[in-house]
Amino acid sequence: MKKLILALALSTLGSSMAFAASNIGQCVYPKNTVGPDGNLQFKQQIVILSQPDGEGTNSLLKTFSSFTVGAEANGYIQLVTTPDYDLPEPDQAAGKIFGWAKLKDFDSVPPRNCN
Image (cartoon, rainbow, N blue to C red; front, side, top):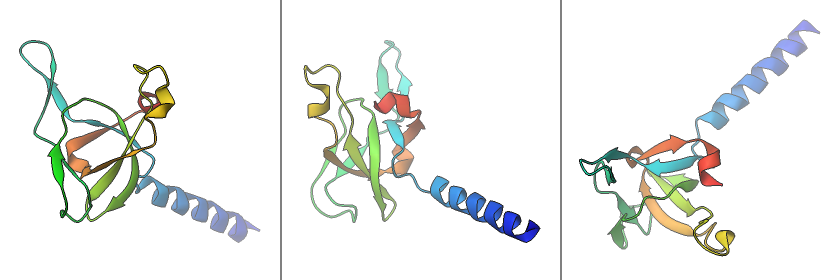
């Protein structure tokens, strides 16, 4: 019985550690600093790619928004839009794939910042 309980505890711990290693479902926000004028500024330019392999079209992130991580591939994270409460229908813009970016360009933030 002790072995069964120990095995169950270890398997639960192991599965929770494996889940924690993934960034999928996490809320992320671009790394930023406060500029001399008091406004937020990107720490560095953030390149948004159309594909996680570095090929395809790319653009620069221009707005400060939170995103949900939809997938991970080749060191990139897939950015999925979150509800925009500045719009009359906040959920209308949510859930769309925005593009792919490097995880190092984003900070993890509490999930409440993505809802």
